[in-house]
Amino acid sequence: TVKTVRAEYGKYGIEAAIFRKKRADNIETRRINTKVREKILEVATENPPEGHKRWSLRLLCKEVVGRGIIDHISADTMSVIIKSAEQKKNS
Image (cartoon, rainbow, N blue to C red; front, side):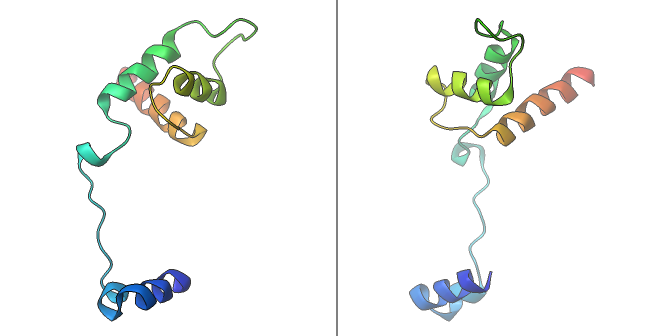
């Protein structure tokens, strides 16, 4: 944090170092929107590739990127998507 504040101060001055910008958190700025989530969940419900008994998070990430649904996704993000879908299904 100190390093970041110091860098901000050096580049943009005291105002930028003290008053940091807030993230724009609207749907348009997110990389993974509802359409992408739906496509990911479609892939997750399909049978896994030959030689695999089930989908692992990393295998699912590779498949989604391979199909061109998204440029990059981490296993952690994939886990959040799958868990949120399971919670909605159980509600």
